[in-house]
View 1 (cartoon, rainbow, N blue to C red):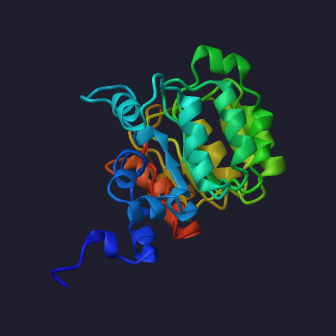
View 2: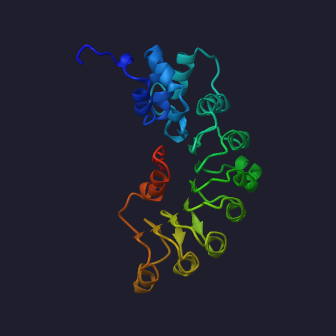
View 3: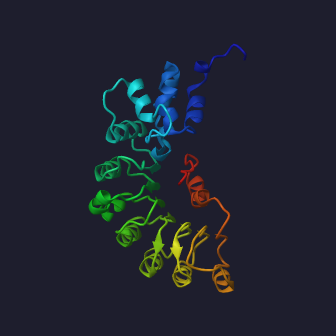
Length: 277
C-alpha cells in the first residue's frame, strides 16, 4: 500500500472524491495533477453542484481566480460567459444546483443557464444591480420545472411576479431564502403563491408582526422558518403559539445559511450546501 500512487486509484474512487470538491479546486487543481485525475475530473458526476459564489473572482487574495485561470489555461482574456460555458459543458446538462457569482452577472448569463441546465433544483441569484433589475424577466424561472429551492441575496422589484411564476411552473418548490423589507404585499404573496412552502428564511430582514402573522396564517405547511436578526417585531406568546407547529423555528443565534439548505442534502446525495453571505 505504501508504494501505491494517487494516479493508480480506481477512476470511480477518484470521481467519488472529486464530486465533493468546489469549483476552484476542480478547475485549477485537479485537472493538472496527472492524466488519470484529469480523466476523472471530466465525469459529469463531479459537476452537479456549481457554486460560482465560492470562487475568488473579486481578487481579495492574491493571486485571484482570474489570474490563476488565465495562467493555467493559457488564455488572454477572462469572461464569466466563457467560464460558464466550460463548467456547464462539463456537467453535460446534469447540474442540480447552481449559484451565480456576485460579479459580472448579466441577463445573458441567466438565460444561458436556463437553456443549458434544465434539471436545476437549487438556484442562487446575487444582488440585483440596476441593470439586472431592469432587464430580468421573471418568466425565466419557469424554465426550471424541477426547481425546489431559490436563494436570493435581496428582494428584487419583480419578486411578486417571480413567486407567481414559481407557483405556476415549479410544482416541487419547497424552499426560499431572501432578505430585505418584507411588506404586506410580499407577505401576502408568500401566502397566495407559496401556501405549501416548507422552508423559508427571511433572516436579516425588516418584518412587522402583522406581516409575520400573514405569513404564518397563509403558509401552514412550514417546517422551517428562520428570522434571525430580523427587526420590526418582538417575539411574544401570540407569535410562538401561531408558530408552534413549525419544527424548526428560529429567531436568533443560528446559522442563517445552513438551515434553509437542509432540504438540499435530502433531495439528492450529490447536493452540497451553498453558503450564503
